[in-house]
Length: 329
Ligand code: HEM
Image (cartoon, rainbow, N blue to C red; front, side, top):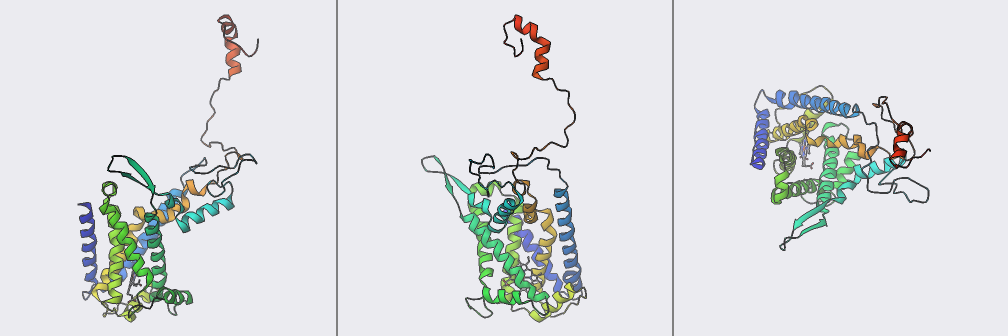
């Protein structure tokens, strides 16, 4: 049910976006909504990041899997358990660029003999890497539509991405990788009963939304042959704050653009916000220097303590009388 509902919502949003091609509505779907979506995206992200940054983290949260810095003769695992800024950068870079913690993903299965078995499962890591890197390349390539002249790295990336030279216009490797990776990420949630059980409507919605954007983009490039000059006019107008809405833009393009607007507006309020979140994750960005520095809880208030010495002074005679050993005779 939650799968079909998410699919229906994304389908409905796409149809709604197509209204942009109706005469008179181009300004709403081509200018007002994109600006609104970007404002929500930026405002929402700033709000989320500020709320994380303002949360006090008095102690080091050291959920790590390697030996922390200790005595000189105990070998430290610098990347698992960094103790200074430089090694923290190393751990963060591996996490952000290589999704290192996802490599540890394991699967649990019940065999026919009703035995629980655990095994490494790198498919999720591979799917996630393929999806995220393809998305990055696609977004950089899209800059050609909003820039004039087109920056050299965009032209270069476009050339490298289309090196297979298949089809006219050429099919980009990342377009295919993006769609295949998304299809895999969606199917694993649908096919595996355990994953289906823990999946939320928001998980399917995000995947269908990205898939909708990717499929409509593929259709625009390879089947519908969009009026790319008109799209560029719209995009350059938007980024230079002098918007114009050419009337030769197809309704399919408006569907694509509207789904992108929904994604932008939805991003800061959904689990997709893990993108900036990883930078503020205390378990990743805090050095474990617990054995080098004494961290005092800033919320500690003076508490009246009762030391063992004072306790013994108070009860010594009674302790001796009942045979309890004492430190000081
Ligand atoms: C999250 C943002 C977006 C994603 C993931 C996305 C994805 C895609 C994909 C996968 C394609 C297929 C061809 C390719 O890979 O380049 C495509 C094509 C296209 N997209 Fe997007 N898109 C996004 C944002 C936008 C925006 C904001 C615009 C408006 C300027 C746009 C306009 C187009 C057009 C016109 C095409 C056809 C390109 C061509 O004919 O070469 N897209 N998009």
